[in-house]
Length: 261
Image 1 (tube, rainbow, N blue to C red):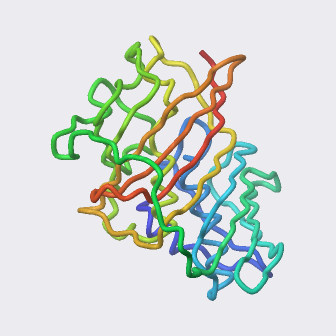
Image 2: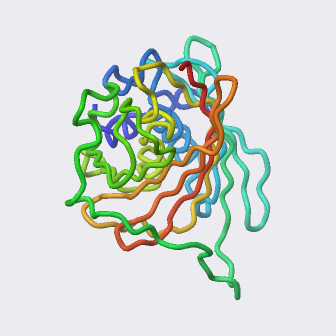
């Protein structure tokens, strides 16, 4: 099931509720790939409200495993003149699986229009190698093209706690905001290349800010950075960014990951 069709097939279930069917090709172990869960929640919100300003920020909690038939309940928390806060709660078998809070905000004139940081200097997507060349990735990774620009390959005992990966949807119709959300969680945790043998990992929380409404990038490729800042007691904190092929920063995020290594 390609990304755009899975989201387009969402149907109204009841008041403020939307149903989706997550197929097995989107699984990560026994649960759904987190980027897809977040994208489904965002699409349910978009289906419920057709007059929202641009998405500015999203907070995601991955609470329990989920797959198959799911239902997303959308709740308006507050809407003012320029900003709206809306939550989406995904359930499967009456159990909460994913909970999201989205902030939408109207554009306003500002004298502060500056990017405080450098664009990374890494090989282009055409110069980079297949990220999973040393072995298959999780099931859902077959939905994406992934190329390593800098850092270590998965489970290679790499000394690097930071990696840069070029990622692209194989689905050529996946080019809207839910598609960006759906791809931004694709890079595995930054500590995974440091593993010397495979061990389970699981994203627990994910928070990100959207920095632009312009989703243009060459041939669908996005450059993604994940950098581990800390790892202790079975949890790792990491910093994340996404750039387009022109070097424009489009998304920044943070994630807390459970590791069983």
